[in-house]
Length: 323
Image 1 (tube, rainbow, N blue to C red):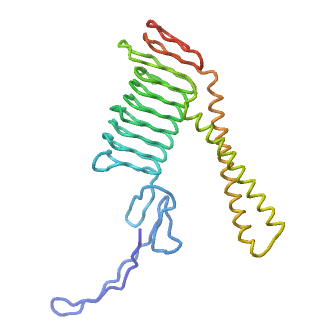
Image 2: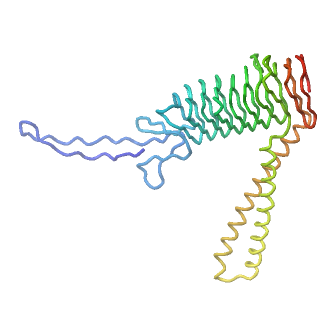
Image 3: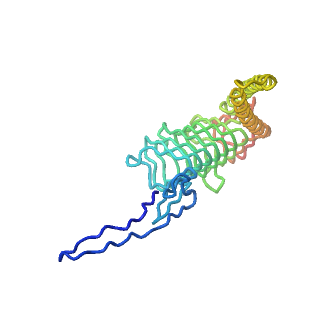
């Protein structure tokens, strides 16, 4: 937002040729709201000091961390926002919604791709039409999920149904937690820690696999982080060795090299610390999965249960199973 300073105005002439004195413009101070500040370079400009959506007031502006939209369709196109996104209406087929933080959708999703850097809540559910991809780093909550491919870094909580979907969950899966139908059938459900459901499978006996194991994506990430740690550690050792040599044999022409090496070593140290934190986080996830169970009140014939190397195919309708 830019402030236009007031002027003294320009005198005029009336219809009777009499002079009309100028009325000076009124001065209005700029008032930065939350997430905004007066520019250091120009006191007449308000700039954002965080990512978000600008909300304009009479002589002020604030930066909201949540983008609120009525729907996602041909009018809005794809939606990408670094903060939170709240969609009040439906998300139509063929579109993509990407939130850097939380994503909340109050209506249905049909054939759209959804991404959230933290948590995702879908108040109704998803008709995936065999083309929806959902990726969420935190927890995922919905009433139902159908015909989807899902990767979840936290827990999945579904009230009624997951059907004909491929699920990879790095936490636990709870179906029917809030008193809903709580059923999974058709497809593959892989969780790291635990699966709790009211019903697994269906009378029609669609292929249904429920498995407790580390998702392949998590194992690949663990390997990638380990490789990056080794590579970064090697680069840091080389930078420190070169820095030690130059500082022990100082010369004027090497001063810029020393500064550059110091910055490089500091950056590599920061990267290495982050990689080690990620390594610990992955190790803790894997450790927490050792005593996981599959629990269901009712399991239909044909459902395949896998926990580690143990595998069981249910041959008849079974009640209250713990595997």
